[in-house]
Image (cartoon, rainbow, N blue to C red; front, side, top):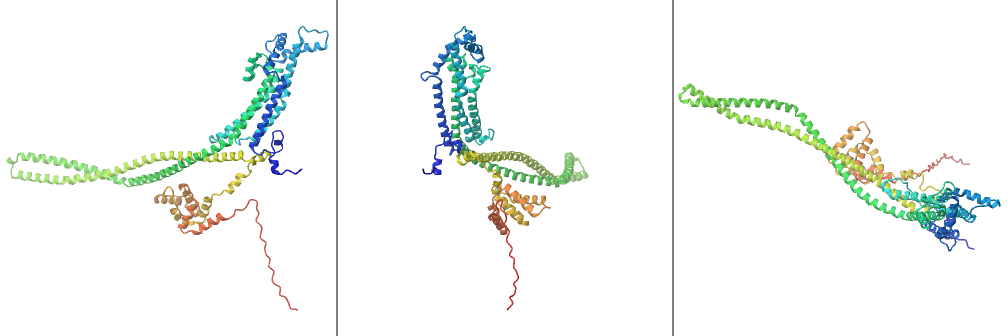
Amino acid sequence: MPVRGRGQLLRKRQTIDYNLSLERPQTLQIFREATLDALSGIEARLRIIELKFYRPEVTLDDQIKRWLPSVHIVMGYANVFEFICKSQLSEIFDDLERSKVDPTFILEWDPKPTQQVMDCVEKILHQSREGFADVISTLNLITNYLKKYCLSFSGVDGDIFLETATNYEKQRQEFSLAVKTNLDNIKIMADRFEQTGIRITEFGLTVREQAERCGCSHIPILLIFPAALDNIRNAITAIRKWLEADEGYPTFVQCDIIELEKRKTVHAKDLRDLQVRSSNLEHRIKSLKRDATEFAAELKRLEKKEQSLKVEEDEIMEEVNDFLVDLDVKEMRRDEMKSKLHFLGQSEHEKYEKLVHEIVMLRDRKPHLVKKVDDLKKKIEFIRMKKDLRTKKEQQLEELKIDSRQAKKELRKTELDMERLDSSIKRLREIYRFKTSPEVLRKIFHKMPLTKRNAALLRKKKVVDKLEKATRVTAGSIEGDWVKLYRNLPFYPARGEENLKTDIDEIVDKYMRHTYEEQARQCLWRWRRVHTRACVDDLMKTLQVVKRRDIVEKIEGEFTRRPRQMGATRVPQHRTVRFPKVPIQAQ
């Protein structure tokens, strides 16, 4: 007989009771098909058990109705209205056994129905405890396989974005509990009838309807076998639903991944908009702070001027009042003298002429005073306007600070949502890979870890931030040219010359006692934080602009250098020993 190859072995049909105990499932689909075949076999086996328990030509209801007369007779002997516990008939059973061994003991009732009831009870209890043992064992085996292979790879608690995974895990636990409860209840019903008693209310709806139909609600023992069949069918239904849920699980996970990717795109746009808005608000806040500081400094310089203007205002107002009073008095005197001018002498005429001349002089002086008062008012109004502008700038600054805090709050929330989305998408992709890869079934079968124990560590060591590496190299080599570099770096949103100067001054003031490397590191860190599109290409192009080609070559050398493998040891170079030449003497 030719030896079968590996491909032929893999094409061998797998079954629950044999192949899956010796080898892993080839795929989850094959495992589900094998499970469904096993469930169909169990249902066929249940029909055989039912036919053996009753006669083939008798239905379940007919058999129960055949037992009812005998049970009613025995219940009458025992003077009970409900046959819920085996101990209710213990005295009758004892008397029956005594009559079998003691010929002198004569029963006052017919032992035939009593014997029929005893046989019926023993048959039902034996069938409940031992008749379904093979079926229950197979269902428990299937449940263990389902627990082993039909996994959700998730917990019952998790992010709202992982709702599909958490819901399936809850369903798995519910299905497993339903199967266990239904199978355990078969033996529990028999034990309860023998010990504490059982009532019709403890059965399911289907069995209670059958009891009403047959008129045996007061005799639960007759319904233990139908209840056991119903429990097994319920367990089979739960397993079928479990298989159905597991089959659709990867599809739902894939749909969630697509939906989360779309949501991530929308969140990324919102995040960029919020970053620009937050940056613009920060820029406006800095501008307003600068304006408010300038106004405060200017007003501080004008404090003495304002005080002198107030003193000058008081003096001018007093001068104006004196002028007006003097003018009014002289005009009144002029009017009085004018009315008596025909009666006055030469001296009085001269006084009148002098008074008129003084009034003219005063009137000529009035525009000068008015102009002086207007100029003073303009100066005072200018200072008052500066104060109003400072107050307005401060109010605008407070409003912008409130808007900035709200924008930062929204930005942080959006960043957290993006982190949650990224984490959820990675987790769902991992779940989808686990559910669709046959390699995972092999690892489960051999009890191997699904992921490498040091996978996270290896991932961190493999995935190196190129921009971080370029930043580190640049900061270590740029020295005092970091100011020129920072002024030429691109910014999005655009950053004005005044802001660049402010940033440089802040770094110099704060890190004055530090090295150039630290100052350069701080400026590059600020560039990466403010520039929302920072990348290695921008940094390298700017280095070429500031004529630091040497740093560009160092960065390129850092990227092209091959990383040293973990666990690899450096092979020491062999040192060549050179011996001096020995002159050959002639013979």
